[in-house]
Image 1: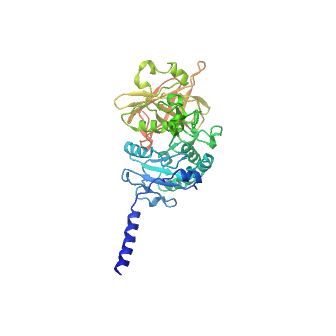
Image 2: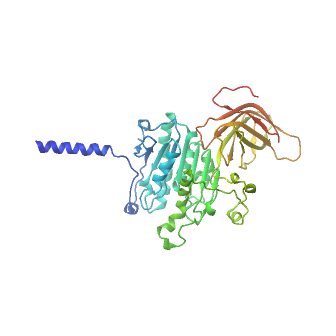
Image 3: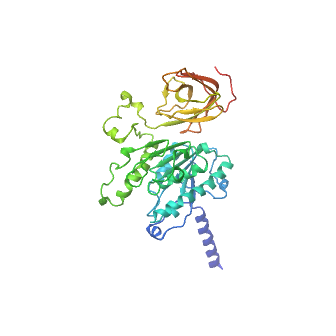
Length: 425
């Protein structure tokens, strides 16, 4: 009797210990890759409350989560092809740096079963399936208070295209997608709906680091970065004698550059340029007469939404300046295409700054058709809305009922969009 009791107690103790174990990213090996794996997806949630022990989200009952807070920003990290089956080497740093930089819901999308295979085409086929599964989770989050505006997807290689497929399912209303060297093979010649595209989110930024091999060469995002021309990264092996690093080093560099950008003491300066050849010829290093802040360390993007009531269609450009309470003013550096303004139709314009202002006291707008002849036109605006895409939790700023005279800068004090419409001054 005593032996039986001991055996039962031992079984119970082992089971209790196992239940308390933290869910982990699926760890496979080359044997799994050779035999192939069936697609399985698990979502591992980390927050500042459970930074060292993930919580596995339940597919059909997301709200059972203890830590998920749908009022906060939700960040998804999606890995790519895993020919050896091991967890990504960068995963721990990604988790720690993202949680250190912001109080968010961080969700690691683990589709290692499905990405681990020697047959790359099998992993490619699984991408849309992963996107469909993610949509099931996100739909539940939206029902319980989450916002597409505050969703941010970071995709690596194939994971970048998965993020794009998810964005397509929500008609590009997801707040932001970052593509870290989006995969080129099987996607290079595909149309926008069959790969990541700049229309898949409100803001899409891309780092291209291996455009001559595993990455995607052409621009895909709202803004595209090509470190060192997008290929042959410093420190990476140049020959096959470098072993496995020869194949993956350039491709992975996009991830490590992104991680570096999350570190407060690591500023990566970029230079706006028509081509890498022009940069190497010294045509893009002056930074507007050597003013340091004119070379972007990071582009801070805002979405400007405008509704006009002109009876006639107007087509032109909007230049934006923002000013803080100390009087510091910065001007948009992104050259957008001409926008067509139609009566009562809301248009969205992406505008970016190479510095950021946390508290905006004034906004200045200038409308221009860039026409050298003819009368000055007016743009009659019913509503203007300015929203930070890098920091979607900030208050959106609005202004109502004002007129922009062509080539005449108008400066005004905005009001939070949550407040009732007030009188203009």
